[in-house]
Image (cartoon, rainbow, N blue to C red; front, side):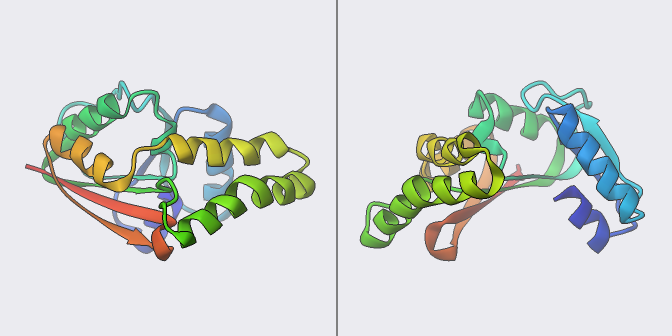
Length: 171
């Protein structure tokens, strides 16, 4: 995601962070291939090393659900953003209870792990995804958590509710 941001805004300073060193190394390799000058740093999102008000914007795409403590992560996001700064969280919410959500849940929990396991040889990685999504708060609850952390927040469901985009502004 950070590489994409740098491509569309080459004059912006973009800092990509991940908890896992191997993910950072993959990112650095891709950045070199794409001739992108970007900082990729190992960070714990629950205890960021950056000073208060360090960033004008912060994004987290499909990683927030892996945080051990959502409240603490949002507090850190709020702390490192400058006043008026925005956080954008793109995540998979739990499937809805309606018919489309049930169909998606069936695909996500039964079909995807089998296909993913056959293709990758790692079925466990594809069963973790639906488990982590099912345990994630629904969009309205994440909105409330963000507001409790101090953000003025709105969200939008994407792809028939398969993904949700939450935007918070530091007040």
